[in-house]
Amino acid sequence: MGTRAFAVLLLLALAAPPMAAAHDWRDDDLTMQQLEAFDRYLDDHPNVAGDLRRDPRLAINRGYLEDHPGLRSFLADHPNIRAEIEDDPYDVMSEVDHHRRHESHGRGYRIDETDLRAFDRFLDDHPAVRHDLRGDPWLARSWRYLRNHDSFADFLDDHPDIRDELAENPRALLDAVERHDRPVHRPHGTKKKHR
Image (cartoon, rainbow, N blue to C red; front, side, top):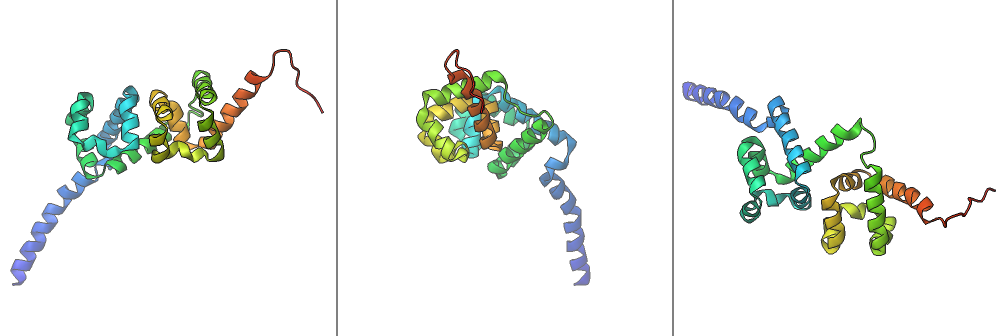
């Protein structure tokens, strides 16, 4: 009986390292490269990125993958990413977003003047969205809000840097838009009053 228990423990000990290594793929440098590759893929395919950020489960939805052969091919070429997505798609998208924030942290503000103007124009054309975001900037991260405001969701799909900034710090971006907006709406020739 003691020999049988020892044999079982030995078999479990021998089986444990490969199972643990397979699960802890994010600690491996190669897998970090694959995560960066996934981030680049999403950068190059903003519509897919927007879809997956709204509903990460689409990455394991057969119908969605049939309609998006590029994503299907990417996942076939990156089996570790595919396995993790199958296990927990929300966690993988969270890791991608964390990687993106960490990568951009040292670069400062990601929104250039062109994107800032585009966002300002969008808000000018959609005053209800501007009003809602002024009241609660975090609505920009709400799946429910975006589902009910297709034009805003489409705009964010077309402008991934704006979407990312809104996800990280919506108040700062909206303040930047308001600062940008002030001189544009000042009537020509009007001087600032000094007190």
